[in-house]
Amino acid sequence: MYSEKVLDHFKNPRNVGEIEDADGVGTVGNPVCGDMMSIYIKVKDDRIDDVKFKTFGCGAAIATTSMTTELAKGKTLDEAMKITRQDVADELGGLPPVKMHCSNLAADALHEAVKDYRKKKGEA
Ligand code: FES
Image (cartoon, rainbow, N blue to C red; front, side, top):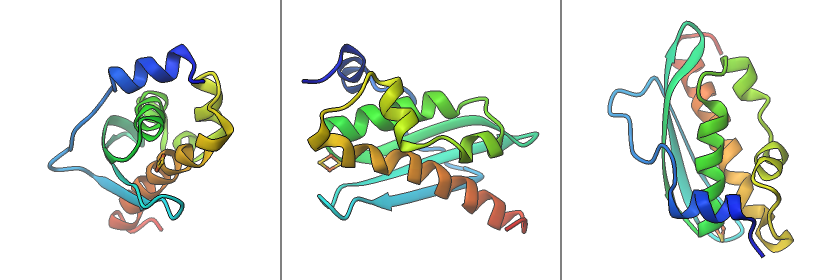
């Protein structure tokens, strides 16, 4: 079953939406189920100043992305790149094994958003 934290983030996801003038955007799809998500970041002084997400996916994907955005906010870009799928799942108090693949998307999308920012800045 789902932990209280997963249910909380599913019912009240944090940082939902889109940043119109985002500095970086990461969009990934889950090959297992076909769900998709995008993470938008605003960067200031090499830190994630703001972050929002849109998830077209299951409840576990929504909860993990919500948690990922919470973990990412205020972090440096290097720190954000080190947030792993496992970190997100652990932070949520675990996910049912059958739903672990759903947690893959969030960390990947965050990393893609950072890469996108760095590419636009000519740093990558
Ligand atoms: Fe697709 Fe969970 S079933 S992300």
